[in-house]
Amino acid sequence: MTQITFHPLPTAAVEALRQGGADAYGNPPERAVSSGAGMPCRHCLGNIPEGAEMLILAHRPFGALQPYAETGPIFLCADPCLPFAGNGLPPILQTSAGYLLKGYTSDARIRYGTGQITAPDGIASYAAELLARDEIAFVDVRSASNNCFLTRITQSI
Image 1 (tube, helix red, strand yellow):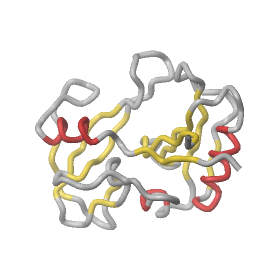
Image 2: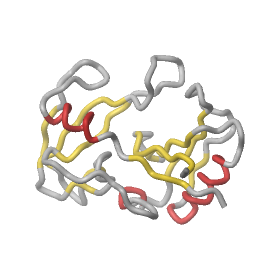
Image 3: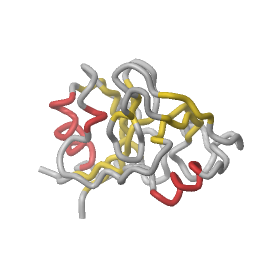
Image 4: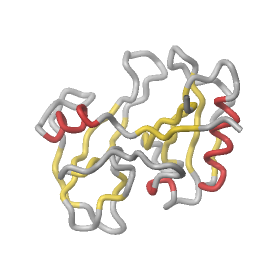
């Protein structure tokens, strides 16, 4: 089976946002307090604890503007956190019944027909199945209920 890697947002980009850098819409991140079970941080790929300060911002996980370059809200821990570097499923992909996985080509275009709501225990196998296809360069994982970007998956080298 194809080996996969879950990617957090790059630390340098997260630090710039923590310092008030502009989000995908040119705005500084909003500050808020996490409530309930916590909101999913796209850097540590864990949930921001209830009561902890967090950032809310617009994020577009694509380098260029084009029709498939979706933008949406994400959350980050306001305080420094370590980037996810573990093996296995990140904690933020273990809290819902299903997640939307979509395969993209090397020019960051959605490969029609790859979008699938997938249970947590099927994420690794479906991502590996997609990445085994020559035309798929990466897989994005999004919230099945809110369509927010969560993490990107690539084939491990």
